[in-house]
Image (cartoon, rainbow, N blue to C red):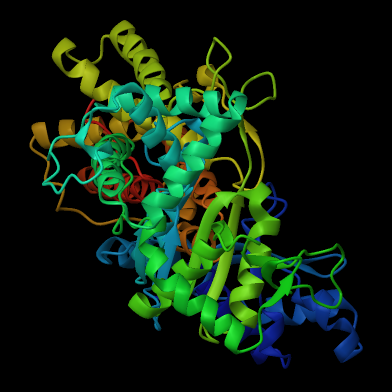
Length: 588
């Protein structure tokens, strides 16, 4: 169905045309003076030069044609040539009835759906998820959900780091600790054990110990580098250990991502791109795209007009070893072969922008991507503590994501228990749901590209622009609807009537903005726009709620109309929070 603002613009454009002016001047926008009107049109100002008329004269001509309009109940020309507008309540109610009847709440599905692959995980195996992984997961998940809601085929890929030096470090440390393991016995023909010789807890202790030692012991580091090389060459024992590391790590990663309500369609890894590297390197050499520079194989990616120097994209080091660039380019080759995506979107730290500029330019220049495939970078800012520095534990270390979630959920549990609104046996489950909203909304309500302060006290508050406030609003609506049914009311009966007060009309007008918020959030890659919409809608509902005695209303037609309005508001709020990646409990 046609979006709300498009309908208002159509009504205004018709009036411009009937007054003898170009339809293009009829664009309607939200009023910047809500104390005077709901919407405004500035087309008369723009058309003054073309028609050699005073703007106020053009505005007056158009307003004259709007008398008796089914779209606008008020239209007035004001100096120097603005047109102030209020919407006809019957026109507004008609739109909301259509919206309520539409399973997509007035959001039009894409006429030409795209295949979009989103790379939004990126953790290294053998390491726990920490708060640095939070933004990629939350923002990427929201973009995936928004894209699917709009009808696109969106594929999420975690893209694990599993092929670098960290593997060699773990293998080397294991060899030093347990040299008698069969994985290190030359001539062992297998089969290797099915069970890993370590737990996830042990693995998470092994890697930092090995990493720390490699920085102090050069011989140890050389041994780890050689172990990495042997693994990549297919040494059977090392390959078996690598498989164990993957299995143990992925089980833990999936558990934590599941708790965060983040899911991936693909659990691809750096190693999956390795088979594509030899042919890709040969192609780059053969076509003359790559050349040697001080022994390294590189592709020049600088362009005329660059404001700063863009270094060449290195394909192979002077010793023939591959790099992240190599793996990422080979991954693009793999993705093009398997999925032929219209777009590949990388949700990563904005500090990697130069790196991705190199990779994208290289892929484009060397035709590793098809002409119509878009390579996009959604760079996000840093999540900081109240001191303005990257978020840390109380002891000053990098906080594990699991620890952050536990802290937030414990905070919510205490607030719910103190509130005594939820039965004790349900308090923990409710705290998990509300805590997740605090984390996700706290992150997403900030513009992705900017750094922000993760303020636990503010994000867990039931007041203000927070996830718990939104959930409390939804629960409040659910409670009213449940009581209405308990008193014998039927949610399917009744019909929306014209608003009985200004706060009701304001709520109705907020509902009309849903489609625009969703579409612009996806197209502009700014999920915080959905958050802004949600907060505005929740505020509009709560103003209406505090001014209206809904269940005690004696006029049954009026009461059932309000119930229909509440049902649509609840549905819109719930769909919106689902697009952000969380849900609402039944009670709070």
